[in-house]
Image (cartoon, rainbow, N blue to C red; front, side):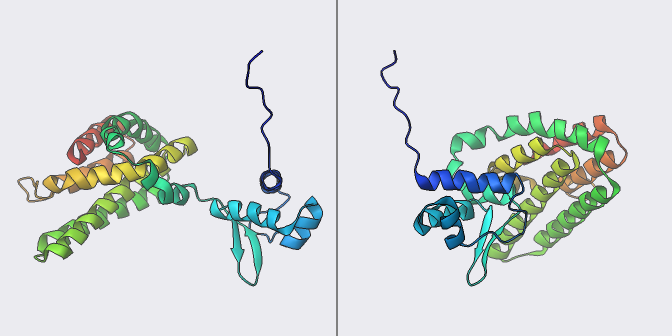
Length: 242
């Protein structure tokens, strides 16, 4: 017999937390609806109000419930992307940044394949908007002489580029791919910031930035439902941002 077969102790707050979570998942507590008060919950669960408060605080911290002072507590729509953004600093590491290129080549190309097949006209318009905003901000960057403002514009340019990639993932219509990108977004953003500055003055013979041209080429390939061209341009873009 194994030496350590002790039963794990579960606190009353943990049990209340699990029961509340069950109520949310099975629809007993509908989305956007107000949940019972602390006193009502304490009576229903047969525990004290402090135990209920601890469980409610955990669900609030996860973004599943929203307690409004003087009003009550409501069930929220869970925002995975926002939740990951708030904790990304805790899992960021230099080693993780070195994995970005491999991730992008493996996952983003599959995402692009699905986006070419599944993108709606409305989503294509949003992707086009990303290209337009990127080009506009980059043109603005070239006019700036103040180093601080130029730095702010550079960060804005990278963030718009990240919006472009985010939109591609949305267009794939695959929830797990979307979740994976939410986790990878922080490292990708830092990676782009670290490496993209050398590409800002990379222009073709027509004096249009190569970065901008590649974004537009990807958009056109998705619009034309041409995966081979989309993959070719996306590989080029990943190389320019790495």
